[in-house]
Length: 251
Image 1 (tube, rainbow, N blue to C red):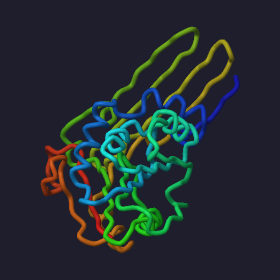
Image 2 (image 1 turned 30 degrees about the vertical axis):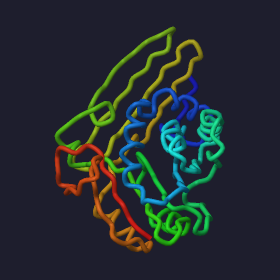
Image 3 (image 1 turned 60 degrees about the horizontal axis):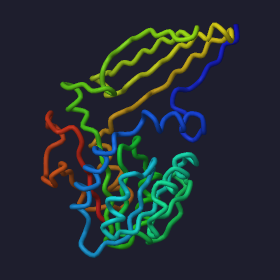
Image 4 (image 1 turned 45 degrees about the vertical axis):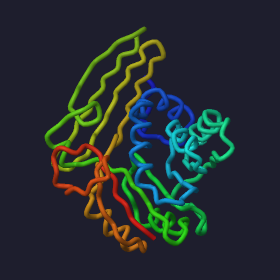
């Protein structure tokens, strides 16, 4: 039997990204709601938005219809191609492939956003700070780790299932560690007709530590760093009832 070891998260690889479009993003209604709430935080007079790790960019149409110019970047060529096609009717929509750690833009944007993010690093924060105009703001959507210590959804739960179709047996194990806020995902696939076993492992998600994120933004040069809920109201990250929130930093 042929045995294949494979990482679960393979962002940037065409077969994985094509599959991810079908299951990995929030539904359009949820994305539009996020974009609407975020837009209320945009400074008056701001017109140019940079979206880091933009994914398939469906929610950009909410901002584009409001007259903003939106530039989306992602390391996935598949996601960027989808974004271009989805928003091709808008002249102010622009997309290019780029890892956020390799951004090299000088003072071009009024607003930078990052939604449903992976963990922020000092390098990416520095690149974002450099891309903003003086007085620009960075809005970073975060998942509340304290919320998921007491609540569950499809990403933050425990499950173990067997399925079989056309001679292909699939075991899926998903576990959410509420102490460390890490989701672990593993799949074992026995493809009997092709005499192959595929073992997929990897971290599916990790909620962001808000205290560390503040320190990273401060080190990059951001000031007036604060947390607000979806209604724009200040709140404590110790809250157990707020699922997602925004962290805002100013240049």
